[in-house]
Image (cartoon, one colour):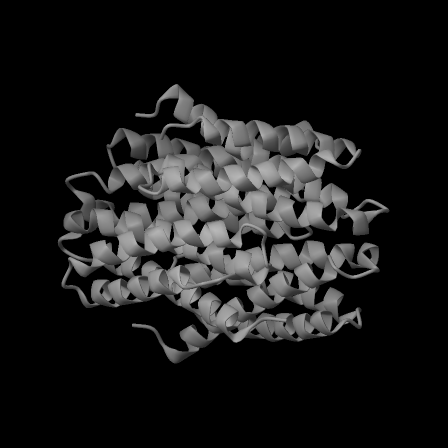
Length: 109
Length: 109
Length: 109
Length: 109
């Protein structure tokens, strides 16, 4: 049985992962892609880690709580980097990452 | 820009992946877990492959179309196996897998 | 440029991940699979997390160090569980997990 | 029990995955990163798919053979793209990808 809060967190992790995939793909098409290198690198890590976090929660993994701590950290870092860039995909990603970081912080799994 | 059909397929792949995670976790708690061994094995593969398919679609990967073919196959196999078991989590998983297999088949990415 | 220690750690993470995959697959074939349920569950988590750790190290990810902490924890837990079972695949897995946990602990990435 | 050929293929898939991670990370540091955009995108897909293929082989998955077909395809595409660039990491990646594509082709799993 899954609580609503548990399901909401999974949904938010997936949302964040996919916004990061989208941002990385879009960044690679930008003219100033060199300026976006760190953004792309963090997007990759954040997408991987959020997806894995979502799977661990879905499995009721015994290390879910610890995993959410590193997940919160990468979400915060990725959101902070994205926030520096004016591209719409970066601004959307910043919002999704910061919101997901907040959700990880307040999770009691 | 993403079309609605594209987004629907991603949503269905995620739904299927997470139903498989749920089914594998629940199968491991069943008394007749020995009878569920193939179900658990296929759930693992199906979850991994559906999640990867969703990411490739989100990235507009050049191999998304080929990947959906193997995704359709594992969804069909996993759904067929799950359908043999009366547990509620298996019946739910069978439905999600078969529905996802159909969505992969009709996708024109 | 990669240091030798860095490469050794990546190699050990991969070794551990694949020993866990092997253990989970073999556990599912055992007659006493019900007794192996927690072992299989931890194998799944440990394999996923070790593989991801290896990728983050290979990428020189900014969160590699934090990730290794949760990786160490799951390796320790999985190794402790595997050590309880007499099956050869469990004993091998216990050794790989404990060795990997030690490697994570002593890493200065 | 694993055959030698089976183990060699897994080893080659891991080698290819990690060479792709390395190439993507290095490409993001290049001055002409805009020219490397397709290389980075294919590296990401190739790394993901090779790692997954290795896991499926390790598990003796029922869809391993089909999965190797899409794996061969992405390895060939990624190798062809990398071969166009003079950077050492791209040349190394081209070699690893082409070699892995060949190994996938000749596998009888």
